[in-house]
Length: 319
Image (cartoon, rainbow, N blue to C red; front, side, top):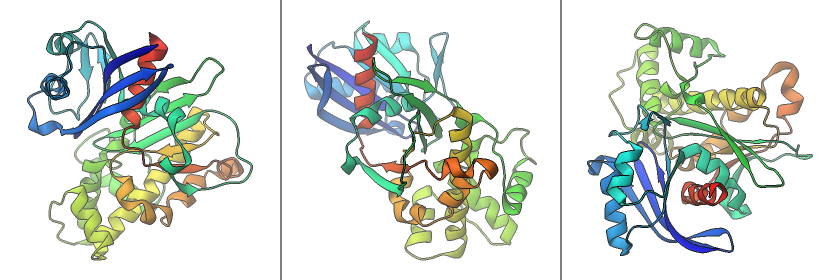
């Protein structure tokens, strides 16, 4: 099979769009653009701009997007605009539109990873067989499960980022206690995401009695890594440890001993800090299941086009 399609990986901050050529049932990105979502009035406008710049007409589209579809509407709190499938079909001029969750596409795309695409956070001896978990903080917290099979991968999406955030230290208990003053449900992504990093910095400032001005995630990580600013460094340390705890919980809850891939826009910027943080200690601190977690490898994905490839691969599998 030889074909060309548009494949997209759309999150709350960026829309990564690729023109993908399919040859011998394998996708290859031949043109790629990264768009800032806030600079466009809608996803349809981004797709039209890409198609025009690529000189492409009406072609099949595989869209991986944060959220899930309910009655034709994409449900997601982190997108800057409303997305409907009918609207997308109208905007790009095709009925051949395949839609999937963004982390589902990233999880599927792991079949295309090579050794150079993964930075090892934890290497293990005696790796176990089984499903693989993909989890990562970006504008939200995404997670999906990839089950390798003889007829191709099966991916199970999750809404783990919207599940309740469980504290495991006295400090985390105090953080959640303060957050509960303003809401009855604290989702994991309220802390474990880009915006969540800002929330964590603010609450830790309250606890420490330090004036914590509103900073972006990039400013917080720069203050921690470049200036060794104490509150920013503690924020990043708590963030990494809590992420390890949540990732270890998900391995047990989803039955994913085959490994963990970390994704999302935040972690590549702090990969060395993450590797030497409390992430792995918290990841393994699961009581009687610690020996299992000690044999689960963890790697950080450093392939920027993986969601695009995964969306194209899922389109092929479903068509």
